[in-house]
Image: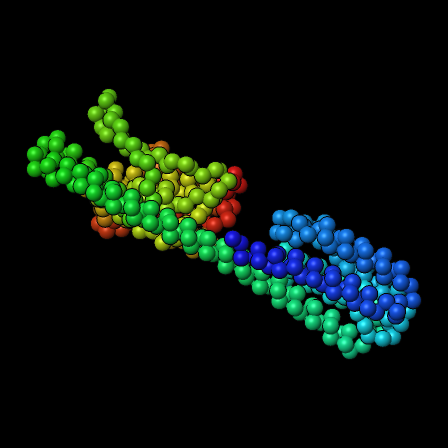
Length: 398
């Protein structure tokens, strides 16, 4: 049940009780009215309106802006019509025709829209009371201020309650997802991971082609352990290219978000983790626009391809993801021999545009930068920076 639903129930009861109070107050004080028919007409309208609109104050959905405006109009009419029914109302402090029923209208604003809406409605009620009194007394200002402060306070409490409810719901979702992830991790550990570990051991012991199969099983085991531990478990597909005799690994992500939803960069980079690629990520989602996330992931893939081609199959690589308030930084580092000075310029002259287009070109289109630092004999480091609000062509496609 919503935390604010009891407030709507209390408001319905308040409107009925204050309606009866206003009617009884006018009945017992009928001798003071110079124009009783004005009081009778307004009270009849107020009673019919209160009873007919009870469904409108049953919840936030039913309580529309149009209803709130009409309800406030009825409350203000009760205040402003008081001098027409009682000529001495401006000289003697006394209740208005609507009496404390007016506060119910202000409370509806507070529960529906929070403290700002409450301040809006109570301001109109305050002005109407000042106009009705003509020469407002200290008691008038006291009552006006009391309604204004109380309604704003209730509106603020409602906003806090709604925020707490959303936080609780999110916490319950995370708890349920964590339990499910732990259950899947246990099942995978008891089945798939143990089989992969056994294949790795047997393949290494047999040697030859079986050793290569064991090595690949070991890589898959490490990658799967990384995905399970981080909660990012995309579906992987391994297919064999008969013509080349090579194993081609591709990653498919089920239930891919729509093009308008932000993507978690971690889910795109986690499949790269393996026995020779370490992946370090933040604990929270790293959200980017879909195009920016895909292009940044493609640039990381290009950097890892360069590691495999130029640093060798046995080179170790590290991927580090940093999520800053205004930008995302991904660093790809390896322990290879490094790039000789002038080699990149030479490669571009030869028409090899891997770094220029696959990495720097992608980052440039996103409004980001790609910096490459390489020291011969000490490996290579590629730092990719992408702003959270992309300024490039790709970002505009969001």
